[in-house]
Structure formats: structure tokens, C-alpha cells
Length: 96
Image: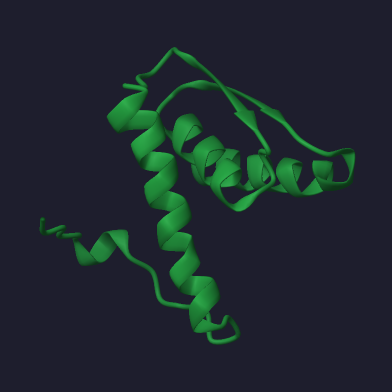
């Protein structure tokens, strides 16, 4: 199986991030994508409940679902609330 991506869909790795951290984003994103679109058949207008919305996979799920036009509801620990809210804010700003 071969995957091709347009260069415009990529971004430069931040110079202060370690390679394992950057590489882990790919797995979180792939897991989120497969759950939402390959298995869940997500489309605009549907609702998505994300458990652990501040985690690596959960935050990707929330961003991808919101980008697809779904209504996103997130759950998680109170200690991680601000992280999840920051992701939601950045996602809504980038959609403008």
C-alpha cells in the first residue's frame, strides 16, 4: 500500500521537537482518521463523542471531526480541561 501526500499538506518539523514526538503524531492521526472515516463513516452534521479529548488520539479526533463539519463533544480529566479547550480554540481559529 502506497500513500502519497501533496507537499502543501505537510509542515516543517519544529526545530525544538524530538523525532519520536514528531513521529508519534503520524500514528495518532492515522488512528483518529481510521476510526472516524474508515470505520465510523463520519460526515458533516453528525455528532462525535471523544473520550480523552486532551490526549494524543483524542485531540486528533476532535480536530479532524470538527474539520469535517461534525459536532464534537469531548470528555476527559478536569486537570486536562485547559489543554482540550486550547486545542478547540486553535481548531476553530484555523477554520476561519
